Structures are given as C-alpha cells and as structure tokens.
Amino acid sequence: MCGICGIFNYRRGEQVSPKLLEEMTDELAHRGPDDVGYYISERVGLGMRRLAIIDVVGGHQPISNEDGTVWVVFNGEIYNYRELSEGLIAKGHRLRTRSDTEVILHLYEDHGRDCVRHLDGMFAFAIYDTRPAPNAPSGKLLLARDRVGKKPLYYSERDGKLLFGSELKAVLRAPGVSRDLDFEALHHYLSLLVVPAPWTIFKDIRKLPPGHVLECDASGSRITSYWTCPSPPEDLPCDWDEKEVEADVRRLFFEAVEKRLISEVPLGAFLSGGLDSSAVVAAMSRLKAGPVKTFSIGFEGPETHNELPYARRMAEHCGTDHHEFLVKPDIVRLLPELACFFDEPFAISSAIPTYLLARAAREHVTVVLTGDGGDETFGGYAQYIYEQWAKMYRRLPAFVDRPLTSLAGLAPGRADGYGGRLRSRLSRFVHNSRLPVAERRLGWASGFSEGEKAGLYAPPVRALVEGRRTTAFLEDQAAGICDPILRQMAMDFRVWLPDEMLTKVDRMTMASSVEARCPLLDTSLIEYVSRIPLAQKIPGPRVKALKHLMKRSLADLLPPDLLERRKQGFNVPLDAWFRTGARSFIADALHPDRVRRRGVFEPEAVTGLLQQHWAGERNLSNRLYALLMFEVWAEAYL
View 1: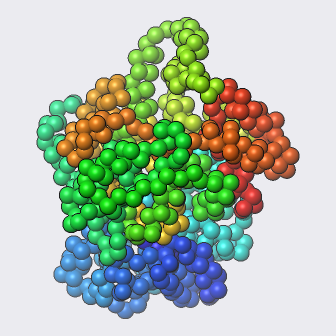
View 2: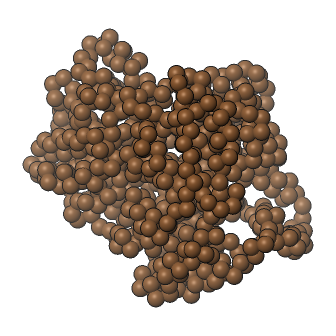
C-alpha cells in the first residue's frame, strides 16, 4: 500500500522538475511512511511513498524491467501475484524481487494495457514505457484503477502536462493547477454527500473512474473501461439449486478471506458486530493460526451509536485478541483534520469513527480486513425492501397519498422533540413511492433533493448549475436495466460504493498508515453473486430477507442472535452534537455573514435549516453536515 504520483510532459524536450516531483511525493507521506523513491527521464517523473507489506526488504519502488525500458509505481495489493509470478518465470521473465509490483510490470510487457484483466486485487498504478511503438513516438504512460475503486487515482491535464496522484493534494502541489470550484461537482455533492467520479471539487482535476485505464503519449490521452459489474438477466428464472449456490458462495468467501491474509507485517480486523465484519472475523479465525486481533469502537451516549456489546459477543465467540475503544470525539478539532485528508467536501459522518478506529489499530497492526461491500454484493440496504412495497403501493390510486400522509403525522413522537421513526418513514415512503427511480434513490438517502438545492444556492451559482440534475447522472449509471431494484443496486455499486464507502475507508486508514482489505469485494465473489437471480438474493419484502443468500451460506459462522440482528450501521450522533456540544461550532461556521462572504449559498436558506433542526421540526443533521463540511473544507483549501 502506497501513495503514487507523477508528471508526464506531452512536449518532448521539456524537463520534469525534480523539486516539484519531490514536493508532490511528500504530500503523500502518510500513505507510505516506510520508503520513498523516484524515477525521472526526459519527459516523465514517477514518485512513490511506500507502506511496506509484501517483500518488505526488496520491494522498493519505482521498479523497472530487465533492460530499464519500462517503469512502474504501484499502490495496492495483488493477491494472485504468486501464481502470476510462476507463469511469468515460465515464459522467460527474470524477477528480481518477491513483490507484487514487479509482476504488474512483466504482465504489461506481455499484454499491454490488458494486463489489468489478469490482476486480482486492489490497485492504482502508473507504467511508463520508453520503447518506440509502431507509427508513434516513444514514451507512453498508462494509468489504471482497480475494478470497484478501492484505490484512488486523480489526474489533471494542462499546459502540456498530465499530472497524477493518489490524492488531490499531490496534484494541487503543481503550479498552475487552479483551485476554481467545479459547481456541477458541488451540485452532485449536496445530494450524494460525496463528489462522484469523474468529477472532483476542482475544475482542473478529475478522478479516473473504477475499472478504467488512461493512456497518454505525445498525441494526447484516452480513457477506456475494462470492467463493469454484471447484472443478472431480468427474466432469469429462480431455478438455481440453493444448496449448490450456498456451497459456491461459502467457498468463494473463504478463498477471498484467505488470499487477504498474506502479509509480512502484523494483521488484524475491524469488528463492528454486524453480519459482514463478523463473518470476515469468523473466517479469519478458522484460517489463521492463533487469535485474530480485532478492533471495535463506540461513542459515549445512546445504544443506537454503540455496537460494542455485539462486537464483544462476536470476539468472545471467535476467541479473538479484542481491543475496543469508547470515545467522545472533539469534532471541533477533528473535522478540519478530516477535511485535509479528503481534500474535497466529504459529508459521510462515519468517517469520524473510522479514522479514530484506524488510528487506534495502528498501535497494534499495519493491515486490517474489513466487512465493507457486503451490502452492495449481497443486497443489504433497506431501500431494496422499500422498493418492493413501493411497487405494490403504486397500484393504489393517487388520492390515497394525502390521507396517508396525514395519518403518518399522527404517529407518536420521541421524547427529544423529533418526529418518531415511524412517522418519518411513513411520510418519506408516501412521498417517494411515485417518483422516478433515481429520485426515489435520492429520497431514500439523506442528502438534498433537486428541489431543495434550487432554493439553497446564491443567484450566481444557481445560474451556473441550471439544468444540471444529479438524478440524470444516477440514471446513466443504470442505463439498460429495467427492474427498479436492480437499477438502484447498480447506482449503489457504481456511485456510493467507490465514492463514499471505499473513499472513506481508504483515506481514513491511509491517514493512519494502515492498509484495509475488503474480502466481500473480491472479484470472483462479486461476479458469481451478481449472476444469481434477484429473488434468490432478496426473497420477499421483509427486512429479514436482506442478504438472505449470505446468511444462508455462512449461517454456522455466527451466533444465531447476531446472524439475524437488524442492520445498525456505523452511526454517529450528529443530531445530538448539533443541538448540544457542537451547536456553537456549526452556528459560527454557517453564520449568515460567513455564508454571504463565501458567496455559494443563500444565508437565509442555511439559517432556516439550522432553525428547523434546533427546533426539532426535522432532523436535518446530514444536510447540515454537508454544508458544514463544505465550509470547513473551503476554509482550508480556498
């Protein structure tokens, strides 16, 4: 696991600045505290910071082929590198190290850009090829990102150069890269709570999307896709043999965990007590000699924000070497710190416990396995159940909406002044059920709707984003899919998984110099499960039907009470913080004078949201967090 960066000059004869390359690389020191390396030639510079995991002594980067004509820098882990090494040696390649990095290099020599198709792992890498090609000048750069987007890669093209890096801060280091806002990216951020690929918050910089490669030479750059998560045919009959499917899932899951245990440094796991992380820890305990080191975190306060008892129960069940942390974070100090690690607005509050947990785990291990990806792979989100009920609800005439909304308003409230959970869910269900699919997906989430955003912007910004719709972007992610549940699953996999979940995990673990591995996002497991008919993965409109296939396949790994426990998530008590300890902080950050000076939002609209939240009329904590994180980020970067 590392941080990589580089510079490619389109114009021959223009030298790379060693000082700039060093400065870009230094920005990534937290991603790789163990080693640093550079390669500079006439038109290219490659830099890397290394977190040593495999071939700790001999895996220094950049690495070249035998005659020094091809060079690579690499961030990630290749889990099938030993098998690939044997095949390469059989073909006559001479490998000088035991590292997975060198395997990528020789695969490229044999297969060119198609080398990515042979790699099983998480990766972002850059290969510089000095060899002349037919009808083309020498000097070609290849950038690649793994299939689901576990590892990040940013790039910017301007002034005859292509600059790239594992984080935005490395690219921003280059002179001439503008910090002008991309208001279309901001528009999507307010609804999604993250900036989705290919955008970044800066107009001059883009993300390479997951499953894509970028090639550039003196003639320019080209981006192509090499992998997309398949969906099952929508008319596929549910006649797959259940026992056979469960056996296959179990085998693929254990193989996914086992290949991620390869490490020359201490290794453990994050354990929340939920199904996904518990299954991973249970498999590790069966595959690994000695007790697994496990790490859990909870917040002081209500049980809704503390899963420590469930994690402890699972740790006892598996006999792990368990470490747990109960915290009351100082978010006034933490949020500016988080903003500097994400480099752009990122309003997923579970980043807070992820960062604190990774920082604590680093005292004991360098590598952790996580349960991330289980909901996307096996169908674990509540909106997939809501969609089944919404389909039935749409058969009713529209005139029932008004009385049902009124009935929802009669549901009992909570003692803290907010409407009850039942009231909120009923109202949202009635409102969302008749909307188009992408609007429903946003409605099940907690960001701003298209209508809410229109009234939030200052007039100049409103004019810039006119006609831009996040719902249109989401629809593009599910083009060609008819079933509404499969459409939403595609949106979750292609947008929220890489740009929310995996971005959070990468930045927060790398901020602590920890490598995170996700067995439930193993390519073989994803591709197998994705072909199974939807009705066999979520058999019916009940919450217990979520992740049915995963539960059946791994039932013996968990105690029955944990196996069937309702999903809780990595919850953060934002609403309570904003009404109590952090109230003055958010009031100051979103003060009308400050909002007016920033010139992006209408001060009166922001103040109205704050007042509604404080009065207990609506729980707007996630929307307010999005505005707060934008301001905290802007204070640091603009």
